[in-house]
Length: 176
Image (cartoon, rainbow, N blue to C red; front, side):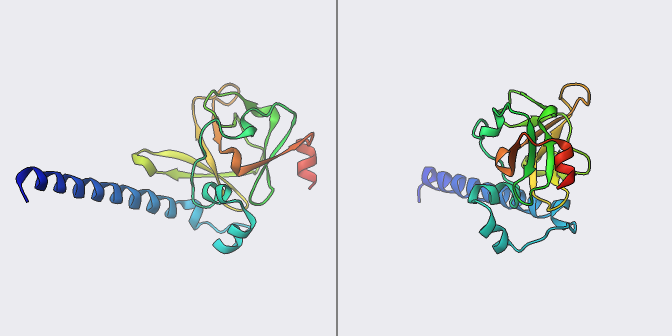
């Protein structure tokens, strides 16, 4: 091998090793998430979740993935109602707390009482606060401190991780 080819080969191998290490670190951080270690009211095997959820829902809720911004119809949803976990149907957010963050994901300034849990997410070389369903542990998105009053928080959720019940109120959700 001449020097130029050898250098290109070594650069390619090094790049592939770095990509592999990054993917392993990302996957390991998702697996090590406190949400994956907690005991939840609703637990299922991966096969049971896969049978219940779409491929995209499984990717987000169970593998801690993120849907493409501006891909969810729930981002543009304007009707009154309640947003539920797509994994276990727990009521999570009221449309009264929804706002247009301009990020391309449904955003809320507060969850319904006793709806979510949070944990530290150290994937992608940064630390964020992950939001998960308190009942099934499904990954919903992240919370940031750049939201509107009254809380100053922005719960940036994956639309595919939720379903929407138009016309439902928080009181209706409590009763079910």
